[in-house]
Length: 396
Image (cartoon, rainbow, N blue to C red; front, side, top):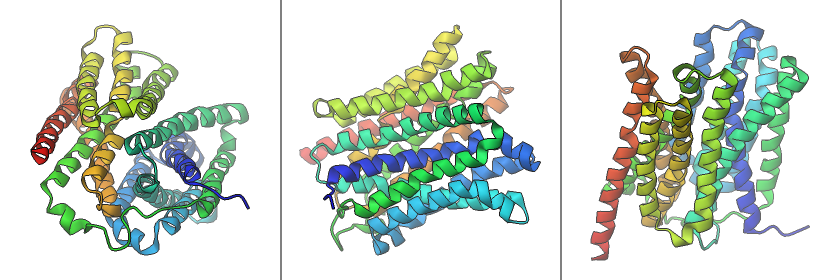
């Protein structure tokens, strides 16, 4: 039997983020099909999104307590099995249970639990690998969520166009094969411990550290800056700029994800020559400019460029904060990554919500909502300056 190395562990982790991309992006592509096939109102369809989000938040909150007990390998394998069960469950459970909607909800809970554990575990698994360039490895890892998102949208849309909407059940089962295969992969690759047994700081000690709360705020702003644009990009392009639905999807979410993934890949390549905190704050400045370009430009083309530049700007936010926090708290363990993921997910919820609330208060003006969202990268820049001052104080 071939001996697998930590490079194989990192590749399995890449596929783990592609799996999470499938979990988060496949169901929304099928919402209209669910509505027609099962006669579901829009409110029930929306609840599927809420269930997915709330379940992942709960997993973020409680995972640190049970993951360290069962171990990284058991946790990540179980996560992939749950993702596979949820993805395949979308095709099976609505027809097995008396209520089709209950079947969809059950499937959503299954893949949300799996996706939440993946989000918590993949980063510390890669951080624990004996690699020299930790920040580069983390940035490249997170780029695979972007490539996965684009692949899920394009491949699924092409599959449905080729085989018809009635093939959606086969599509779900095909995507379920990815986590099944990766679960088997994770059974064989080496997995190192992040801190060593008994070495974790624990939540209590993390909560007592002022700098931890600064990183938590950074994660909130990172998630909010990213999702405020990505969740509204298609609608903004279609309604606010007057482009077609197809063009809006390609110029909005897909363009955003492509540039976000490119930013993470480029940073991974040139990380050795760049100070991470400086890059983070510089990206924050670019993000503010991108939001303002999107909402203030008189040309639809320039506004779309603003949407895309926002993806480029936010690319290193999430993995960058993870890397900074891991370097500052080397014994933070699973608790650190779980709490930061929780903070990031809170931002992922709060950012799009703020855009919607402000837009609604201004007569459904999405430009006003997106302009308000520029506050998130501005706060990130401020937190970066405070972090730099704290780092300078430690050196002195």
